[in-house]
Image (cartoon, rainbow, N blue to C red):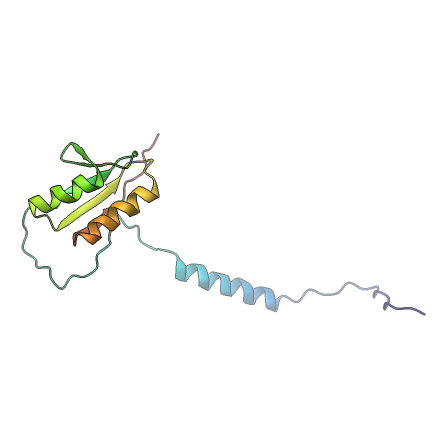
Length: 131
């Protein structure tokens, strides 16, 4: 008694239609999820209804250094000191950037603090240094 059918002597053809379908689906997926244009500065606050086209003072740039402090106007601030200093100056909009080895937790902590203070934040991407 034989439990398994014997294997045919001729090779089984590989059906190519399902493979083409999978490749097409992957192509569509990657086309939809990729960015076609580079983004130099990504605006985190998208509400533009309250803005006007009048040019005023330049937006200050805050840099998060690798130890978690924030550098602004050549001075280092802790997050609490930064909030008080921005409130004293009446600043409602800033550019936020990081140094090369800044931890993501420092960035999100600072971003949350600024958002909690009602400050519109623009993230300026730093380009990697070329060797």
